Image 1 (tube, rainbow, N blue to C red):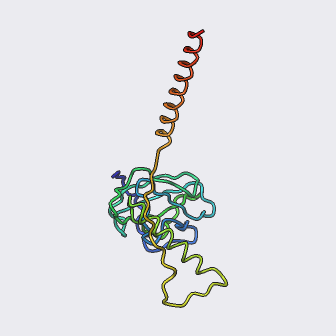
Image 2 (image 1 turned 45 degrees about the vertical axis):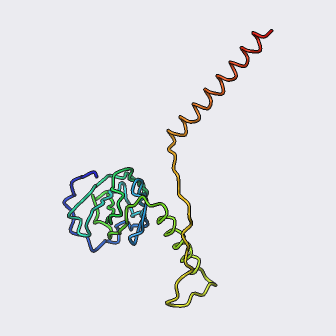
Image 3 (image 1 turned 45 degrees about the horizontal axis):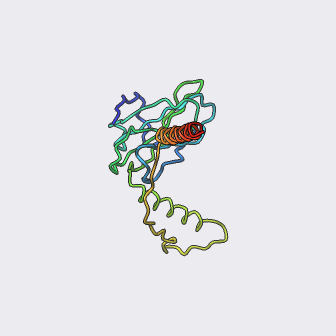
Length: 188
């Protein structure tokens, strides 16, 4: 787990100004793949840069990292968090012409590697969004269509691994082609 020093401005944990960007995802303790956590937030008026902060506690006393995100409203942390189901808190801060603005309100997520649980949560959220669409009536207190977990595993192959596999296949094909061409010319 990487560690970075917290910025001096930690007084705005519970409040955010109108100029502060607002977290979009991940929110509400949603489980995410801890090896690649993608954060997104709303654009703040006049923002030149953003700063992302992730902490192990709600008061941001145990800061895991504070990173400059540039002018983008989307940032992905790769291989920086444990993937053991730990709950993390995050917030974002905008820099304008007048300096760094107050932090946004904090949100939470759970860093996991259990793709099965993540896929299950995604299905539940999709079902909830469908139920919230106009014309679809959902009874108060009734569970939204339960998303049954599917019995499959998500497999990931990195681009480097795929490139290696394709290179081996290409070299093998070329070797077979050369061997066959040699065999045909030597047989004549």
